[in-house]
Length: 247
Image (cartoon, rainbow, N blue to C red; front, top):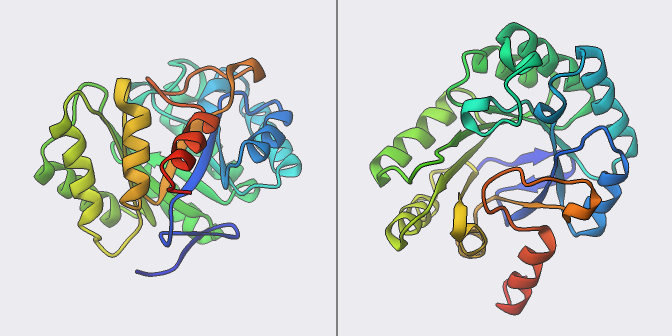
């Protein structure tokens, strides 16, 4: 597998924990992410997508100045779990402009496979030396294994240095499909895990099968809100991994 890095962190050799930051305008959350044991932090800029573009970019700049962790920036589309439907996420040209404007401040961007600006953002990120995560989210179910494999290959072909597949697992078969995708070892880093009531279980099992990235939240008392259905806190995830001797 080709060596991929997000900042100083190697991706693909072992699972890395990502703190999902839903209040990216609060630099103190970056310190909390490091204390919680995260290897990386994801700035969910869609939570402040209603602000003027310059305010969003300034939040990323301040986060970069405050963070000891490499940063992933995303402006998640509403149809794939984004926090808002207004502001820059409602206008692809504005969303593209913000993605490009934050590139000097982050080490990776996460953009959806379904996004019409994927090619432009991926090209700009590559030129800037920023890692590209191409992601796919399914909030109703888990597609067939053949479909998951096709999505992963397409995400790679569309410019993903890292491919992220997140689905909803309602049955053991759903979880088995995600694990089978990880077992494929396709030659590029793949993250795969589930949302919903089995979110924590899926992350523990995905860790065992070397999902390259696993996401957890900060405690809600720190101003966080759940970024995805059932997302565990990093503390819950690390406790489960420790109890099962996986970390």
